Figure: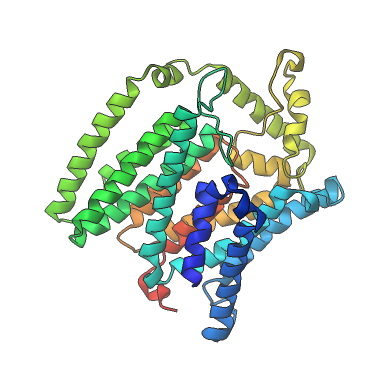
Length: 399
């Protein structure tokens, strides 16, 4: 039941399809599944398995990390606007995801849950990809000034979507590789098809940094030696040929080629202005920051942007790390960095054969974060805990 609840919850937060169904919204289905996952995890640990939450328990460190990051916006709000953050809906969503992340981690470090949950997550990202293509090509949801996708859904920005699609490609390839070794040909085909589909979706978003991070990550994977099996070598060659052909076809598209040839466009200029604003906001509030989502309020003043010539709203800081520093200060940045470092050390020190896939996925997410502000996005935080869980050696997975 716990695993089913987790799978259903991940389906909701990834695809966001329940937001289109009034009945599901009226019964608060996302909250119900969240409470089920958290409650069942607590029951499993404390009552069913009769374990004590000592520092040796695998869920304690993740709980400590998310607690620190959940407190950071409270401290920032306390010193900036008198705890206004308690009325902010996105902060409540952030806390909910932070509480669920250790539960997801706890489920994934158990071998019996891994394949089902990971395959479900990959499937849900493919569903998000189909939903993305439908809203972009059929409903025509795009930005007026450059024609790039801008969906009227949660996380509908093209840079967010590209990051999500790109960071999942290595995990789909990892599952395909595991299926090759297990002689599961149908699963090899399905996972390779999922990886190819996610790559296509990432390219369609036309997010430059996300695409470059994806290309660098895939190039890294192709140079790694996973085993001496001729099957693995054959899959790598086939994947490389298909990938080069697909990239060549997509690159011939005029709009995507223009995005890279005309790098000094308005998008890049605005992004540099958000960096300027981020540094200035951090300098003025170095310890506790300006408050969650408050840095954009200073965008016009700090960037000397000609507001009267603009039809756009003040922009968020388009760099995840700088955005955290500006809005949550040094305290919040250290809490966020602690999660990043913990996940990275888990992946880098992993002795699992899948290590290179996990490293690639982490790199893509970290690199894409340089030009997009995804500090509080649920899918990003959950992904870090997924990577850390998948990196755990089997001897630590037996609870």
